[in-house]
Length: 280
Image 1: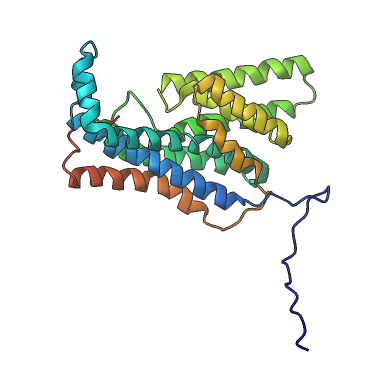
Image 2: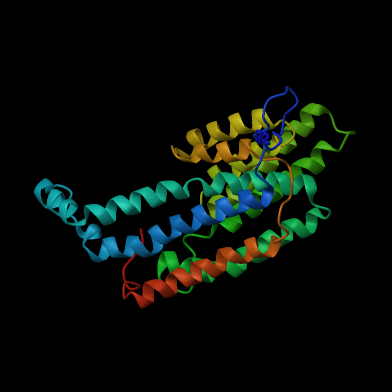
């Protein structure tokens, strides 16, 4: 008699309580999620947004509902795609904030880590201004790398203050608040992307980097409260599945992707003939 074949099931990863382990996302996978959602967001803002303005969005008379409804009927598909893609893009910044916190834990040289943020902030500014302002240099609004830099700077100073054991606990608390407030003020003064609200979200996530559950809960709430972004908390679903592993060693790819993709999207808008219109 032919022996019955027994199906061999692959082993199930188990957590500390015998349940399947759902911590399956590495740091590099998180970065790829952030990169892809950011690209979708910027494609919508820098290219589709220009198409919407070319179709007359910026010139709509909001007091004339008939004209508004007629415009929406003609451009509904494009507008819906734009709105959906911008909502998808809300996932990117919370992940980058979380990865900053992880970087602070694992970096061997905090000075180089902070300096790298500043270098790429300056490298990204011209592509950022081209895509979102249509000119080589615009001082009224700066790219998100400056916000990340001020967030890392705030945490670097706060970590140093916390280690000063000769200071009273109250004094250290006051100085930490002052350091965070100074970096928030600098972000607003430079008109960085997300500004002081982005910096405070970074600080909250970084301060709680050793308490993952609390970090996720407080992080999601901070993006709702400070940035009023309803889709941003979905980022913390992927963060909750983070396994603490580095993954692929593609560090500079993720740094370089930001300025390169901004420039490529602007060139795409030029090729499509809409670069003269304002983005959204």
